[in-house]
Image (tube, rainbow, N blue to C red; front, side):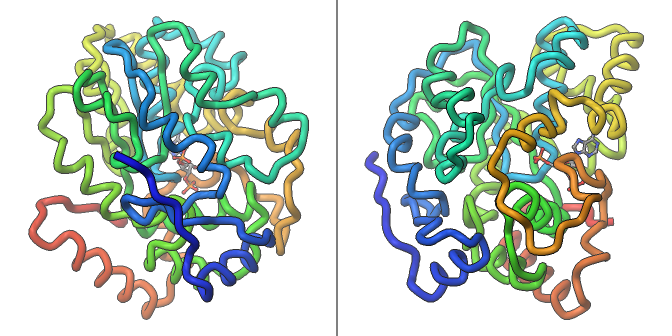
Length: 324
Ligand code: A3P
């Protein structure tokens, strides 16, 4: 299949440029009306035609669903709970984000040079590879369907996802503008990565495939030990109860927030981070870790609009989300 790149309709493109403070910052990638930086043109076909290995472990998710959390769980389970390495080697080296180079399109800092090309990094990794991506299924390597490596798909109730994404865009991409403005574009499928429902439902439909595990953030919050056991069983690894407890500690919110290999602080310090409109020293990549934070951001009206957006898209599926 060939990828088609088109300009985003003018009015929305202008709003996005204003919000992110960068001219022509995003384009539409098809199939799927996926919203990505123009730099993705250099990677798109290469990703789609990439070689997939049977012993790869893929972690696919929409941004801000707890993917770093789930990815850390996967990596530790498959690497004999090597916590020392997990703390000393940054996530991008252990579990690279496949499309990172496209997302850092405008960054000219030394970080970009140091990280190199993310697709090349994945291509050159020794097996078993742990690969993370926020791309929807239609832009992923075609070989995934034939080779069937293990794929963990993580998702989260979209109201919290949207709030978390807003903060992330402020922190990392210097987003200007209000939460309401961001949320409006999110509902329209015009924030980076684009429409959420085709992303989520694309994997929900595959949830019964033996090589796919569909995880929800809220379930990890409710019972982290249970999630660890479930992921270990899926990865065909055995853990003792002592190991499950040790991993639970490593994956706790406070421990992950303190872990410089995961909290992006060393990377953010190196980036030419655009100045956010209202600097808030509380802002962190690993930020709050709560279910229901949307209540602090959404008016009744916006919440009702979001609920209709969710109901319309989940009609006829048996997928549900807990929002508090
Ligand atoms: P919040 O912004 O709501 O706090 P991703 O890694 O996909 O970008 O997802 C980031 C979200 O996962 C953030 O949500 C972050 O705080 C949360 N998160 C990361 N590690 C966590 C943990 N150990 N426990 C709970 N939430 C965690």
